[in-house]
Length: 170
Image 1 (cartoon, rainbow, N blue to C red):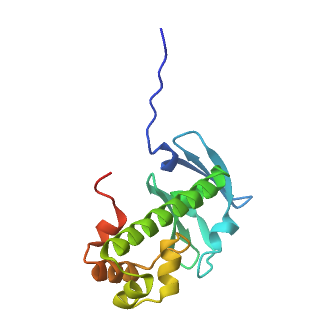
Image 2: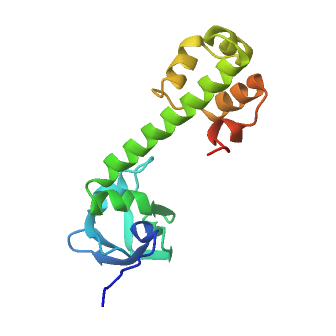
Image 3: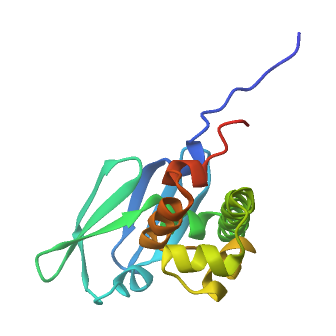
């Protein structure tokens, strides 16, 4: 008899438990895949603007965020990915690598559409109202565009933003 394990694909994103240590001012987050770690409250309080947390007002309304009250009477949301960074040291690097792959893919798609149109970078940049250096950085995968830039490029190329992002032939 062989044993097979099937896991929930999003278990690494789902928080299932929060423990509060008021004395040491820290919270422990447990994920569905078993990872868990303590997060210093001071690290959460460094939000913009900085806040002072009220550890008597902690809720987990769903598996993807924790809501903590502030001493000023408001609340602050702690998303799953912030907590995951503490529970899994390799998480940040994997996220950075995934973002770089996404930027390279988008850059390749933009270049593909530009070359299909028979335009130089200078021509596309002019039609989209952006700098040629910006376009060069986008095409090389070294830069992530603002949404407005993505819209301008799609419009100049006569395609949708979705077409720039997704290769429907794949």
